[in-house]
Length: 419
Image 1 (cartoon, rainbow, N blue to C red):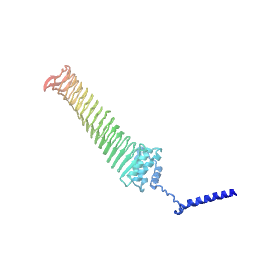
Image 2: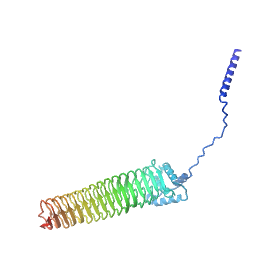
Image 3: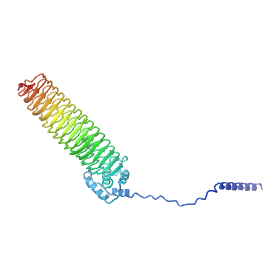
Image 4: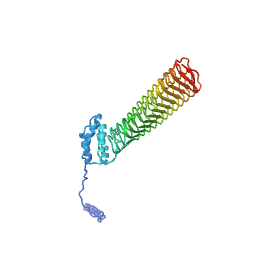
């Protein structure tokens, strides 16, 4: 009897507690069940179209990049898209990075997308993808790129502007005819190769080769160039605000202007036939070797054998030069505002050399023709073994050689020795 009462009381207590709890929520209406809508994720039809064309397209080797480019342009014909679509596809390219010839394929594909798009301004984020080549091929739009790129940025560019926030490999602006390219970092080699117009700026350094065989346009390098500037250039302007200590500046140059605001290295103007080279710092040996025309202006000093075997053109040196100035010179003129070493004009045939400072020994050694003027002190053995030409001394001298077989030596305008 007692157990039954106890059980009854427990059940009653539970029922009272339940009713009390429910009474607190009486003011809330019961929630009506509703159907849960599923998220409708639509695929990006434009990106899917890009991917389909990408997968079906197999580019030809780099030498046939024009045909590869035309093929992809034909595949894009009739497809409607905008600059934002191109930017999104550039981010998707990381999915294909392991494919064969990815670097070339990606560059030509993006170039075709950009050039065939009605929009003018594009932004590409390429940080996850390194070194895409031939980006900006035949470009005529405005492209901002973040990340590093591979070879041939702006190849055959026609118009527009490319701004790269990163580094570039070889052949930036090769064969470009218009527009402008700006690289915030460094470039490796062949910057502006065969350039025919436009403007190119590299804010960092270049390993080798700036403006080789260029016909027109402007190239500015704000950093240093290791070697090779303006090989065989026909026209245009190259400005390097740093050094080119490896030299080889203006070799075979036919026209245009080169300016280096610091040091220029050796072999400046070798075999040049036209144009102007200006170097505000020092240069090394063999400046103007085999020079046939044009003008070289050095505000600093130069090494040995300046003007060796030159046949034409003009060289002006603001500082000093080393030994062998004008050796075997056959034409042209050289003006040195500082001092010169030994053997000035050795074996000289034609041309003129003027030194406003002092010269060392054996001035005019084995001289055959031409004229040498020395305004200050000359060393010993002036005219040693000379057979022709004239030497004009306007300062003191140690001795005139007795082994001359021809030519004339003047001092202060007076003939003092005939060979």
